[in-house]
Image (cartoon, rainbow, N blue to C red):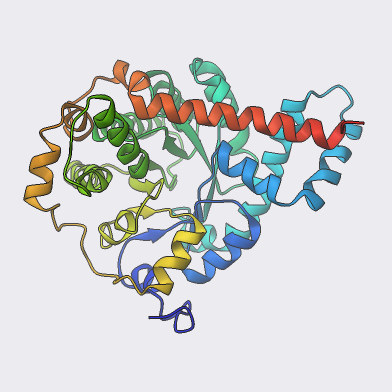
Length: 361
């Protein structure tokens, strides 16, 4: 299939969305990309500090004047407060685009993710407070919280209070299971306390490509030679196993595949009752290249590839359900690297605001 042949009704993404339980979300709140992705069959969107900064930075003709307006309206606000208000407004606009899908699906889809401030990662109470505040921005907000010991405690409490949750900084099967269990506890607590039943649309992300990235870096540090291409299957293997466990245990949340590094992180998951959230350009390329929309969620990773991966102690930590304890999640290499990147994006957003409201002479 060529780019000219692709259309929302014939392209692989649309076929998978129409013919399987696999839900497509867009990995950005960029309004133009989100509109086009909805045309591909997308029924939700994810975001994080890096993506939010990129979306705001992409449209200086819109956000430069708006940031100056916000600065005038709130003369005592600092750069961070102004930047996060822009993130709120970006998320509210995206929520409006997805609201019809949210209403049609009864809340299972049609949600836009907004991530808690990464600088709050050490405080459960601060994460819960901000998650509750963000959840009130629009009826179809889903809030991202890091899958660390502190974050998982915050997820349980926030979910109990009625917040829809999307776990982030999550790369491994043990992290996904710990989050899934926390969300089950929250739902059970709500039922026990007679709180209203509703569809929260909780999702538990595994950032498969970032797991691949970390394992490649780790193998290089350890001077371990791996068959070329084998490590590109690590995230896929973790996603398949987590999905199988969620299905077996009847968890009321779905696995979400994010941080794409190859089309395998979509094509190998088609058929599962889960969410795939590629960046828009990955969606376009999947359609342009006619990647088959086949049911492959239950097709195992090739035995020879999985056998080689299982020789790596760091992969086993990520793949085995008991590979890590909750207290080890924060120190996992992919977690540290990703959290630092999110913190760096926060600093870049501050600088963007500074340039908008106080340009150099």
